Structure formats: C-alpha cells, structure tokens
Image (tube, rainbow, N blue to C red; front, side, top):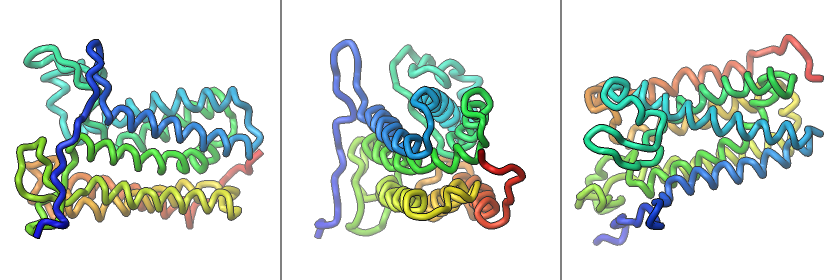
Amino acid sequence: MFLLQIDWDPIKFIDLGFFKLHFYSLMWITAFILGFQITKRIYKNEGQSEESLDSLFIYSVLGIMLGARLGHVIFYQPELITEDFFSIFLPFKFKGGFEFTGFQGLASHGAAIAMIISMYLYNKKVLHKTVLWILDRVVVPVALGAVFVRIGNFINSEIIGKYTGSDFGVVFKQLGETQPRHPAQLYEAFCYVFVFLILFYFYWKTKKSEQQGFLFGLFLVLLWTVRFFVEFVKEAQNPERADWLLNTGQLLSIPFVLIGLYFMFIYKPKTKLS
C-alpha cells in the first residue's frame, strides 16, 4: 500500500522570460510581509512610531538575509570562500558558467546571530531602548517567518529527511529518487506554527513582555529544541560528520537553548524599561 507515500515533483519557479520567480523566494517575501504586519500591530500597542517600524524592517531584512547566508557558508559550505566567493553575496553562480540561482543555502543559526547584531545596531541608531526590548517583540513574527522558510525548503526539495524504510514519506522526484524520506521540512514548519502561537499568546495574554529577555529566551528554547529533535530524521548537511553522535545542526542548537534558559530564569536586567 502506498496511501502514505507522496511523490513530490513541484514546479519550483515561474519563468517570466526575463526573470525566474522562485517559489522559495516567494516564501521569504511572504514571511517578511506577514512579519511586518504583526510587528506593526505590536509597535502600535507599544506606542512606537511608524518611522521606527520602517527602520526595523530594513535592519531585519538585511541582517537576517546576510546572516543566514554567511551562516550557511561558514558552517556548511566554507569552500565557497575560495571557489566562488561572489556567489556568497550575490544570487548568481560564477563557477562553471554564469547562472542566476537565487539565494540558496541559508542557515537559521546564522540568521539568529545576525538578528541579534542587527537589533543591537537598530537600537543604538534608532530606538534607544534596550536590545532585549526589541528582541522580545521581534521573535514573535520571526517564529512565523520560520514556518514559511521551511515550506520553501520543501518546495525546493532541500534539507531533506532520511529514508523512512517504509511506505510512509515523501519521494523527492526532482532528486531522482524512488524511496520515501521523512518530510523533515514540514515537521519543522508544523512545530514552528506552535512556537509562534505560544509566543503570540505570551505577548498578548500575559505580562511576560514586561520581563526583559523572557520572550526572547522562550523563543530560543522552543525553536532550537524543535530543531534539535528534527535533526535526528534529517540527512546530514555535512556528510563528513554524518557519523558524529550529534550533527552540526544539533551542536549549534544546544548553546541557543542554554542561552534561552538563562534569559528566561536567571537574567536580571540592570536597567528598567523607559
């Protein structure tokens, strides 16, 4: 019986002649648009100006995209630094012939680190509150954005799961496969929906947003706990480390979880919110 098996062979882009519109890119655009709308509602609730919101959007987009790309290169594909350097920052492949590829290869760990740095710069230049005040609020839309990024990965047939060894799973036809794998991307996307709902609830229905660092810490704990466990059914992105007890994604997730627990239960702010 193959009732639980899905043959996945989608159209990955729309060819407009002069430009290929990738559905993966659409998922990122959707993530940023929805994130902007949620943040707008939060900023209105906090009495912040639209000018500060516009600046936040710019800092977030540049920081997250650049950090996600650099994170992938540093942690998973460092050979690009010497073999095809400009492809790191541009949506083109130069090695072996010029080709438009879009921004492929984005790491959530790099995005998280860059988000913290970009929020620090944003606070210093624009908002003048505390970095944690901003992080406690932006993690709500970021969690929702993560859902669409993983759906985009599924559309692209990337970050795939391991073979299930049964009739259950997804056959990624674009990879030339015939055996079903775990749809690890969808597992993550499904779990991230609940991460978003939990953060959304804690912000709007409790007073935890007044406890500096709590929502940011909760985000780190929830998101990277999901990532840690889903990694068990993912194919290793670094094949040479496939025999390790924990893969690269799991090892990078542990510090984020520990930092999250610190901000939730130990951290005491030195300054009060204005």
